[in-house]
Image (cartoon, rainbow, N blue to C red; front, side):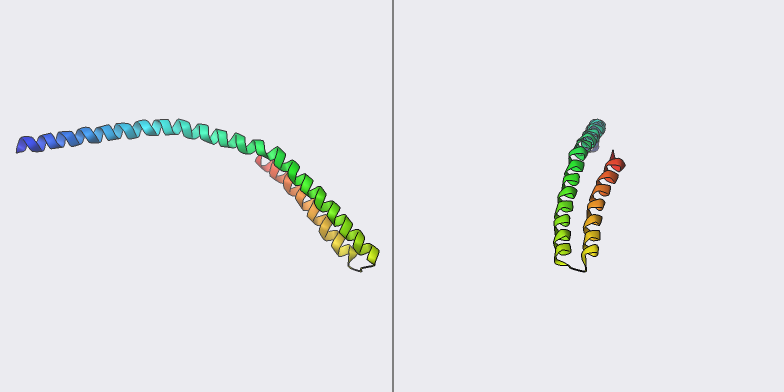
Length: 108
């Protein structure tokens, strides 16, 4: 019976040591792949900023044109609220342009 217990403990130690070796090996491989993955993700995100910035500039231009037409319509009809409308549309365009520029300079 004493021999059976020793054999059982020996097999458990063997299995445990094999499991530890596999875990250690997996962690070594995971460190290298994790760094490569982070570098790849960084380069992918950085490559999207230039087209994204241009898209935000285009949206700002469209918003500016729509705002200009709305302000012209209010001015032509004699609405006393024209300066408030012009300021809000102009502020929206400035915000889009400044936000795109700041995001680009912050992340790149």
